[in-house]
Length: 93
Ligand code: FES
Image 1 (cartoon, protein in one colour):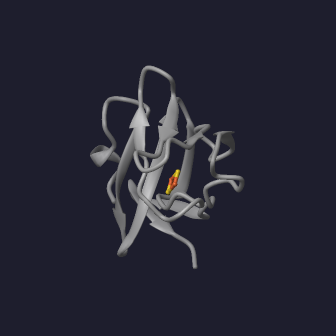
Image 2 (spheres, protein in one colour):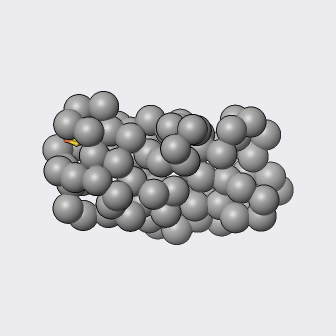
Image 3 (tube, helix red, strand yellow):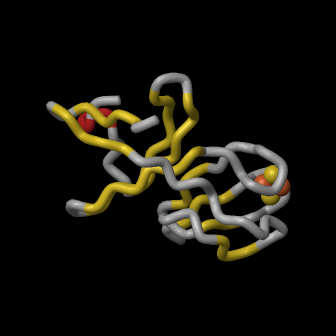
């Protein structure tokens, strides 16, 4: 994914190499999470007003870094290691 594909807001969802990702990008900070809710596997959506990743299935909410703010999820979203090369965001295996 090219950095220019990041949305104007702080959260962007998309796919990198077939992996669903949730990307938080603010100033020089970028967090890349696997966009899979640890409760039962739904995909989250960015809530710009609250600055949270919200799961539409059962209402779990997560901080930009994936930490659980509200259940039923009890585990955080998975943080993915990434690199930025020539403006491209890539996942590290
Ligand atoms: S799958 Fe996300 S809250 Fe249940």
